[in-house]
Image 1 (cartoon, rainbow, N blue to C red):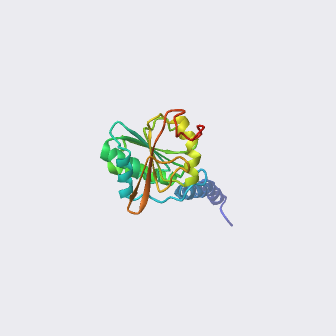
Image 2: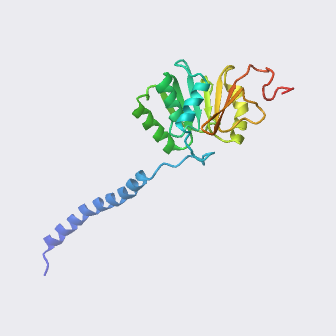
Image 3: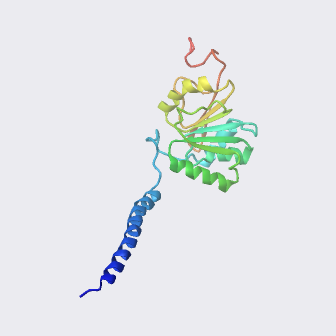
Length: 205
């Protein structure tokens, strides 16, 4: 015959054990979720392909970047363009990318390069982000995206802002300079004054 006090002790132990088991089960999914890689808030417009460093150097040289510049890179990837601008020229930089994995990588790269005080990386939609502070704008997107950016560029950027694009032009907006670097094309424009001849959207353009 069992001892009633033994039953009572066993019941008490079970009551103490059950909350611990439940807590452990609840914590397990949270830990698994925390380990999952971050996903973009929307599908990126382009597949990430890094710009070769030789092309990065040529783009910044073509734009005549100085320490007084603020370089914006749209679709910044691992951040190499604005990081190079900060490290080699002392410029400030802002990189924008919709992919959180790329932003995380770019921020770490900035720390490694010792320029995290000069550059900022934003996980954001480049079409929805204010770029008006840029004195230099760098791009490695697609021709269709470059053309979609033209109204935003003309609306937000100050006249005289320099634009450099790796690989792709802007359709009917003819570049002021074009050069080849290791078999890759680099294009250069300057934002014109409103209504200036040659401005996209101006009659006679």
